[in-house]
Length: 86
Length: 197
Image (tube, one colour):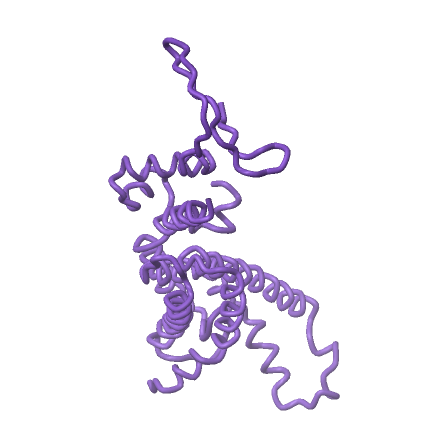
């Protein structure tokens, strides 16, 4: 299920209010920021995970994704831009 | 093959692979051009013309490709925030020559030499419609559209190659692309004029 990161009403960033232990059902209430990565679109999160798994090699990623090197590099630049805007 | 790759193949191919395919196309076009008397003496320029040694047929598209790639590289290194690679710019621009390959056969149509011969030495008021046969006019129009189609296709690939390999913002991309294409009609010709064979 997709994690909602923006308020459907005013479009501002959402915060985490409650955390739940799945095993004993203990609830922790507070006001936590979402991790920076969680605030990225799912596609970008997947890209970052693939990037780390490929030891940061864009060449390997290009081969794996069947795309050209500059296509993958441009996607990385897009993710960097999203991170600096988040 | 998906239609979008006919418009922009560079999502899939760039770098050394694109460069090798592109250089092969340039060499092939120069050989066909030599046989059919077709010149590529400028960026996106195709026409039938004077007979020259083979080396000119080869140098014309080569210099045009080097010219466009060099300008795109300079613009990319100055304005792009990405870590761009020369091999991608030169590779994609060489690959963008491929759609022009079919145009290298146009010189084989005798109408391109027959009509200028008929017109040479005539004043404009001496030219009448009866001077040309229907098949000559039809062939001429067909060639014009045939060449235009492949030139436009190549121009689209050049643009996408420039865009992808430099990751530039449109405010730099479009003016420098137009400037390179327009100057590319003249500068390679000027550079070639220094080579005497």
